[in-house]
Image 1 (spheres, rainbow, N blue to C red):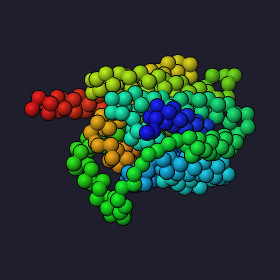
Image 2 (image 1 turned 90 degrees about the vertical axis):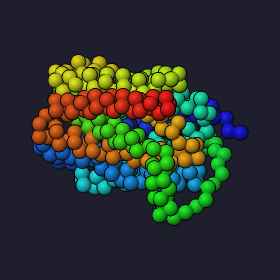
Image 3 (image 1 turned 180 degrees about the vertical axis):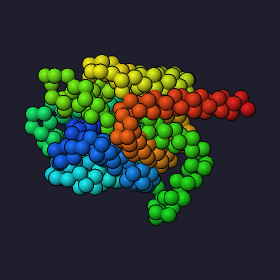
Image 4 (image 1 turned 30 degrees about the vertical axis):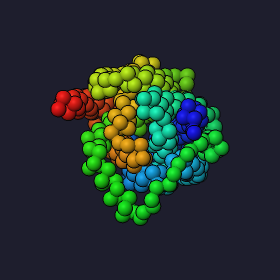
Length: 399
């Protein structure tokens, strides 16, 4: 018998390491490509959005395939693949000399990685149903712990030694995550019947139809757009309103660390609340509050005035993620959760990609205010859609 608590603890460490690895360097790509000669403000904003979006397209294609393979071959191999693939790609990113090649590697990163979905699927598959909300909340806290620590340390090191060193450190940290998973993660898995790529596509279509998860897929796309359309713009916004006396990368890292710290708290608090009931209501409150705190961010004059709004916006927006994952896990049987999380991971990746491109376009042709207003309106829409799903769920229970 696998000890789900021990596995959860080990995978928490693995997830923190992997997200620290990614966030040592990736948040600073807009500043990295400036060193490659992209200095025109409009081109810089467009390239920033494009680079942030690059991994989303390939991740959207590959995540459902990896998810289906995890149902057939095991969840642990997917965790190992995601961390090792990330280590190789991020090391290569530290060697490139052009934004075009960096974009190619971003696409490769999306195809090969996906540590969040891989680790989450393994955790959910080994956790009793009555503790799934808690486990998902803890794993979300791991994601955002890595996202909080990584940019702060990475920004400081980038100011001291340059962005290339930050990418090399990212690679080392992801390789450590691979070793942790290889040595200590346990899995009791019985392989399912194999099949070709056509059978994988057919099974995914059947899952969508039978389990009625299409509304969740749509919500994950919308959530990805809302959450990630402002993300590529933070380093450039910080550059415009930076305080004297600290490096720009350090201040951008501080903003990302603030967001990550808030999201850690949200993962723990919201995960526990959801286990007690009323996930739809909690989700509606989180979405509406996230929109309210995003709305003024493009109008703020200093980094110090930006930080509290980032703190609360990311607390509430991060709270939506575990809610939707809990609702999804209750919708599908355990033996099909790999494919289900793969589908919603693909939807989230599509949202990331669309959001990053949309943020870059809005910032290039309008200004930063348009980016944050758009994200706020999308969160208000998510609150409305959750209210509709809640009403439908209550009506189904009453029948």
